[in-house]
Length: 484
Image 1 (cartoon, rainbow, N blue to C red):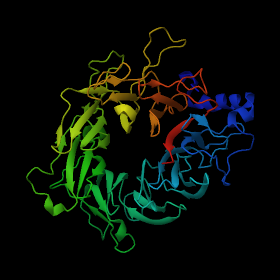
Image 2: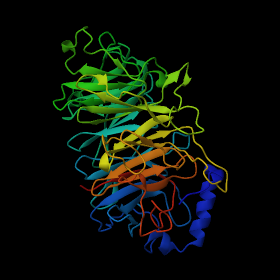
Image 3: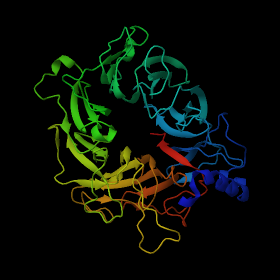
């Protein structure tokens, strides 16, 4: 369902309430029944996708809706309760649980962290976090969740902590105090966590007070040693607002992505971080390699794809060269080889601007890149013929010799849908990608893209609305497949 931009967030709930009161309940739910429930109920679907919905209206409550990802149909079961405004989701490595955060970074936010057991399609644990989060990770054995809460209150230290939570029942099992900790990355074996602070932060006594952007956490030390987090000084590792890291197969090296100017620093970059610091000498091996911009990244083999918006003088500075658009600034995609630690794309790859924080490689070599707060082009209503429509999604064709739809090898497509991109999920069993877009504009909509031609797929279950699912109404935020 697409709601006009003029409706706004405040009018969204009223509009949805009217819709729910007009349409029969059985049509909207695809089954007769009441509101969301924690009681076990199974859809009987073999290949499921969960989509988080933050709207409560009429007889429908906010919750996690189940989709049949094999045929693009809503399941005939009620949503799973997961807080007032379910948003970001993470599926455990063993696919047994789905972790859901409910919160909108407002004073009224419930900050609820929920554990859904995928087999029973029911909520088996809840925990109220001490603040907002944008990053949580799960141990490789699927038992423990680490949640970064930048504003968590801490006694005798600046605010910020990692909450350690059981991934099976939602119980709080520990806390690691790191000021302004924002993003987390975990090694393949789970023996180390890299925690990234928004500021040069210091730990409280008796822990090491060295100011740092990056802290190494050893989970096995939690509860055994008083200081499970260790700051990494900037002598050999001059970090600049790091936001992510990707580990080598043997966990000996982490490739750290520095945001730089876009996050209030100086220069975006990629740099090696030896997990045994003594191995790093001042010979340039561990020094940062500058890139144009980087707030989000994806690694495919030895290739790293970096998305970001170049900044100069505290403002976006990249022109939209090569694109016919009313937007005055754009972002860049950079292709980086980790073996040679060098940029490999010979010319700039222009994408939408904004803060890029979603990326996924779909079928047919199509790279989907999402941002928030981009420059949107929203035409008047009714839409004039040929009017530009532009939102925060970019699709890059990684194929070397094959044109996909109208996009040549190495080309970029900006689909004509508006709004922030908050969820991207390739459907592994098919050549389609689910994208949630527009949460901050007209109410998040799930779009289904066919990766063979980079456009909305034709869904025979809803032939009048390409790329959408019949009866799926709400304000959606994230989408995840939960089955192998």
